[in-house]
Amino acid sequence: MLNLTGKVALVTGASRGIGAAIAATLAAQGAAVIAAARGANAEAAVADIVLKGGKAEAASLDITDAAAVDAIVSSTIAKHGRIDILVNNAGIARDQLMMRMKRADWDAVIATNLTGAFSCSQAVLRHMIKQRSGRIIIISSVVGQMGNAGQVNYAASKAGLIGMGKALAREVASRSITVNVVAPGMIDTDMTRALASGTSESWLKQIPLGRLGTPEDVAHTVCFLASEEAAYITGQVIAVNGGMYT
Picture 1: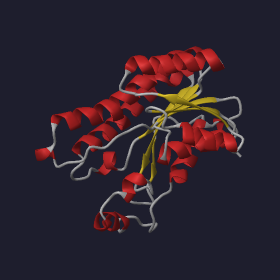
Picture 2: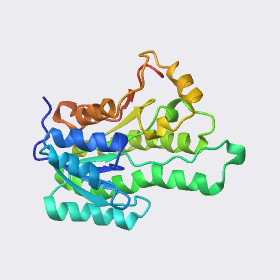
Picture 3: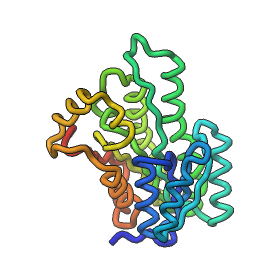
Picture 4: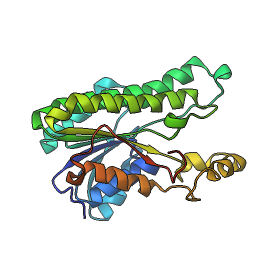
């Protein structure tokens, strides 16, 4: 049984889907979780965690605002004295064929998915380096590995996260900080349910295990990477995709 008692975790994009599942799973293993999302969106997820006996608090955060990111990390340190785990999960999609894609939609996706993760990672590193310990876990996507028509911006951002994670892992390993990337495949979330039925059925045929993944499938992988049991794993991309891409 993994044990994260005494650890403090910051999870971005924690209001629903994969992010909410990650926050809940970390809390179930004993971590104190700061569940961050835009506005008051994470409050329901936090209420559910607390109802089940976990430790969690909601935080309003727009990760494209670097000053806000610094502020939430500083407030976490002030309150809890440390930060042990960062899960860069927040992300958006603005799908369109490249010939029709608006520059604003390219910029928004890169700013949120890639630059936002950069800002969060940079902010926590100052404290993790002082602690000489930490776990940074980045949520990428199978699309960042194999590409997908109509998602040039999204694929670029998710591929960028893989490169960022691998480079950062080499920078901070000497301080006992690990950095790993989780690349989910087709996960049963609001985003995948919004796909046209024909599109989702086409994706399903590409999955050898024959089913969509669950947010919990991703969350359990994140929880392992956050634990002491994964202390010798860094710079890796862990695919959670049912065999869809190998």
